[in-house]
Length: 151
Image 1 (cartoon, rainbow, N blue to C red):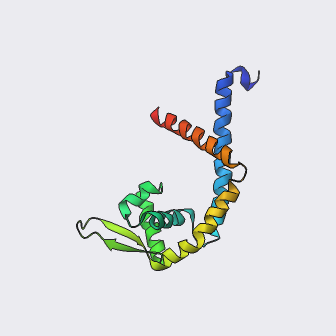
Image 2 (spheres, rainbow, N blue to C red):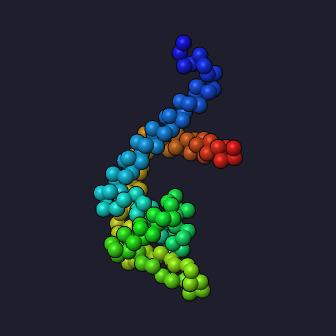
Image 3 (spheres, rainbow, N blue to C red):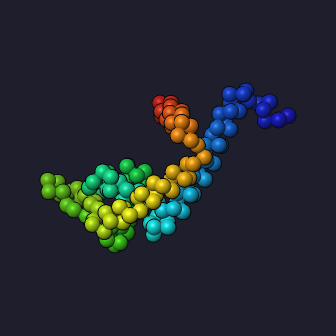
């Protein structure tokens, strides 16, 4: 008795899709992490810097949600980036409970230098698909994710 005797075709394809997506994400993330490490940062540090680089100063309490990080870890990452002189803390003038993370000049310079290289590396990592295939896959995976969120 084979596993397929227990499942219909749709169930079997759903299981296979889950495994294939998971393995693809793991392989892609491994390459992205290697690229980011080559700049002397870890994935989380890069994520925080990238957020500040593209969106400007952010309340530290909100950064965790935006880079998918536990709030307990955010303080540690902000401390590390502050030690490296890539970001600074700034008190909110209207609410003493709020502290902002602000990218520094050297953080800005670093990102000006490495972000284009990072974007190129991502493009190479995703090079297994052409432009039209990427558009199709983005649309389909987005639909899949939105459906799963609604369950």
